[in-house]
Each structure stands twice: as structure tokens, then as C-alpha cells.
Amino acid sequence: MADREYRTLKVEREDGVTFLYFNRPEKRNAMNPTLLAEMVDALDWLETDPDTQILVLTGAGDAFTAGMDLKEYFRELDDQPEARLKALWNLRMFHHTRLAGFAKVTIAMVNGWCFGGGFSPLVSCDLAIAAEEAQFGLSEVNWGIIPGGFVSKDVVHALSYRHAFWYALTGETFDGKRAAEIGLVNLAVPRAELRARTLEVARHLMQISPMVLRATKEALRVVPQLGWDEAFDYLMAKQAWLRANDPERSRDRGIRQFIDEKKYRPGLGPQPREG
Ligand code: ACO
Image 1: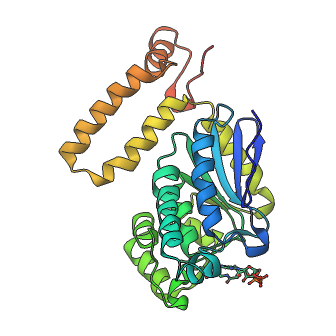
Image 2: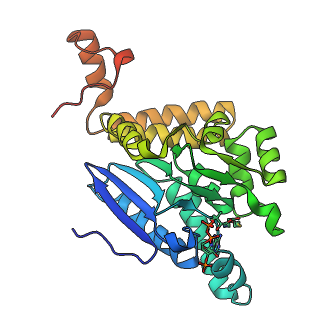
């Protein structure tokens, strides 16, 4: 099936990995209402696209995203209540329903500028790899606004309390190396190596059963919101769900390969998939 065409997004594919680009490089990929709506559509499509095993979210040109579009999302929607409402719903759907809830592993590949509202899609991805040269900033205080949408919640969730307060209050920018130091991204590499390193991580993940990855990411997303007893019950139920739904029967296969066939040790890498 042909790839979908968008005005503000671009899709590239490489061996099971789908690169989804914010594609407004002339506006540093600022998120306007069209982009928010197109993201919701693209995430629905790619979640069910059999050729997408891993989703990489990145930006065209020099920016990951310069955050919310100050002209088209903020100023122009001030006196358009219905359009504003639609954009707000698409923002909510995109960041925390469709992206955070995406059934396959997602990687934010932060190639350049990442400001303000850009922290939400970054944090909503399961993993994040940044160019050392990328620049991050919670610039909201400089625009006379708070980190709204989900941004305040995202940064308190993803960063230590002290780092979240520091960067939100000062608006100070920091680079990819610092983002890795404070745990906002998993690792930072020179920009020239960013795509290759991201593909390496994606290829490692593609050796693991997609259903096991899905259940694992869903479990990690849900448990922080639960008490200890609820988390235990939820994880027992999730484990049973996985066992019933994993078409590769990874649990039985792993035990057989380790105990009976003595050809696999889980400490030494992904379980060999069969068939
Ligand atoms: N909203 C709307 N337009 C934007 C945004 C944005 N967030 N960011 C950049 N643009 C536009 C610029 O207005 C300019 O448009 P023009 O060519 O029509 O004049 C174009 O993108 C290029 O921007 P420059 O500033 O010329 O690009 P440069 O490479 O020099 O700088 C940088 C890039 C540092 C990202 C700069 O554009 C910037 O500081 N942008 C704002 C970043 C920000 O604070 N975002 C948070 C917004 S608030 C929020 O997200 C909640």
C-alpha cells in the first residue's frame, strides 16, 4: 500500500524502521494545527501498518521541533474558539494517547532544536537518542507562559525534581550531552552518527518479539500511576494476557531453548526467534 502524503509530515522507511519526520523545516518544525491533526492520522495509520516495526520520530532540517507554533497555534487561534478546541484535542490525542500509547516501540531521534511543547513528543517516545549538537530549552518563561499542555507533567516525570525546576524556571538551553547526563535522552552521539546509531538500536529491538515489547512498554507506562497492590495485580494480569496473545510463544520458546536445548542464555542477548 502506498505511503500517505501529508503537508507537514514526511515518512521514510528502512528495513522495518519507519522514520516519521516533522516536516516544516522552514519554520523549524513548529507544531501548527495542521501538524497536530496529521500526527493523529499518521500514528493511527503506522500503528496498524505491517511494514512498521519500530517508529522513529525526528525532524527535517536543523530542528527536531521549535515547539508550538507561536503564530498559527497561539496567536491565530486566540479568536477562533472552535478551531482552538480542535487543535487542543489533537494535541492531547497526539502526545499522550496516540504516541505514548503506540503499540510498537518508539524512538525520538532528536536531530536539532527542541523547545517548549517539543518536550511532550520527546518524553512520550519510549526511548530517545539525541545529537550532541541538539539544543533543548523550556523557553516558556520567556514567552510569558507556563510549560502548558502536558509539558510540566512530562518534565517532572522524566527529569529529577531539581532539574525540572531549574530548566523550567531559568529557560536555560542545554545540549544533547547535557540531555543525556540528566536522563532526558538515553544517549547522545555526534550528529553525523545519529541515524546509524538509532538504526542500530532499532535493529536490536527488532530481534525481540513485538508482543513482548508491547506488553513491556504498556506495563512500564501504567505502573507509576498504580499503588503497589494494584501494580502487582495489573502485572499478573498483563503477564497472563501476554502469554495468551504472543503468537511467537516467546516464554515457552525461551525456556525450551535454555532448559532442554541448552542453546540460549538470556543474559547473552535477545532470544533467537524461530520461523
Ligand atoms: N513558532 C512559530 N514560528 C517559528 C517558531 C515557533 N515556535 N520557531 C521558529 N519559527 C519560525 C520563525 O518565525 C521563522 O519564520 P520566518 O522565516 O517566516 O521569519 C522561521 O521559523 C525560522 O526561524 P529563525 O528564528 O529565523 O531560525 P533560526 O535557525 O535562526 O533559529 C530557533 C531557530 C532557535 C529554534 C528560533 O527559531 C527560536 O528560538 N524559535 C522559538 C523557540 C521556542 O521558544 N519555542 C517554544 C514556543 S512556546 C511552546 O512551545 C509552548
